[in-house]
Length: 535
Ligand code: HEM
Image (cartoon, rainbow, N blue to C red):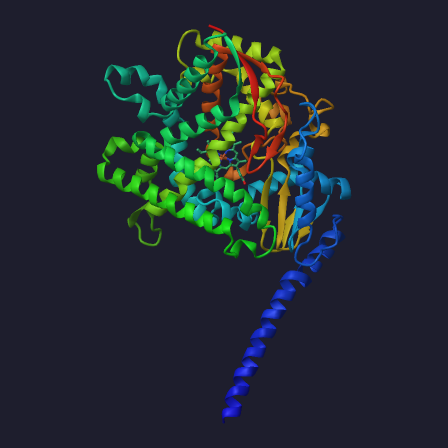
């Protein structure tokens, strides 16, 4: 009897072991090889899959090589530096390539029709797991959960919420603290603080050399703190510090997670990430609890947090007519969305501003045109929402900046099952890689001068410039298009209007052009400009 029991246990152990071994073999060898055959049959080229690591080492060395030295001039091949790993594989295999992120193949797609299809079909083309490890909130959710969150968060970004500046004088008359309660005034207040610092720096000589990058970075953090937390803005700032720490660790994490399984290891980075994550959660929970205790009807309209806490959907149960229930975000869900506003909105908007200032420094003609427009539209008035809409030249400049330096230079998606894409039939388990920056720089789309700064490409709007194709998508596209795009553009216009009115600027001799892709495209060595006071 004893022999029988132990032999049963042994057989069970053996079966379990063999099943696991088979699964591992399938996941790490047979499946990648099968996918590789399928991709080659459809005309894609790439390295043969190498066990476990795939092309990971090539990825890392291409990035190291490209970022070890600055670029010579602004018109050099910026794509080669920013998405170096992509260029490395294009050089080896051409545009129709696949590369191995560990055992996962990453397929390069640049055809505008296919890009449109990928971005439109959110059910099939989902966010990759790696992104979901770094970010939470709507950016990482799928299906019904995403749809529910998008609807609940949307009110926070509607034009009316941004627009209230046109009534600022009315609020002033009533002696209501407009600075902490409305979004555009909050943006204006943050810009005023930055401008005052710059004015103090140039006051003695009338000009000074300044690295504007940390100031712009601080500005966009400040704007999110004010607009997200209103009266709790000082506490919001603390959260931002923790989030930027979290981002630094997330980048290390991202690099190490190319190695299969590493994200689950209790490494120092992983432990630190978890610690920051918990601290952040506790801080936000504290703010929310305080806010819920003091909330009244009007508070709900004042800032992003208030809007998230009061936003609700009416779900009508189709089966039982008249059976309605109100759906709201839970405290934990509000925490995730607030964190995401920082992660998705701070760095990206700072990138947009810094590259605009660099490009306007190198293109003085456009700087003058932009300033003339600001003076013509606003005169001596503060920037207000309705007049921001009249800024045609500034809008063209912002679009051209995002064409050349898209803050998010790549997009990626994952397909879980066999999928038709245009004339292709792709196997499940493939990551789709859309190199936004490559498409934005393509001479076949944008002409021989595709690498030059020419805002007048956008003089008749985006659809004329792109001939209606999906060739310009700095904010992504389809149903998952950036929810904060209007917020970012309003903020950038206010900041530029205020900067251009008070200063002229040019490139300093100490400026080093070195765009670097971390989570977004930043100036690796800052942005040293010479500021000259105008009035
Ligand atoms: C110049 C500034 C910005 C740029 C270039 C930018 C770019 C993008 C891009 C490309 C996506 C789509 C990602 C994908 O499809 O994989 C996205 C999504 C998103 N962005 Fe932005 N963004 C900017 C500013 C902001 C701001 C200011 C906020 C909020 C305060 C924000 C919040 C979000 C959110 C929540 C999503 C996810 C939307 C969803 O999945 O439904 N972004 N952004």
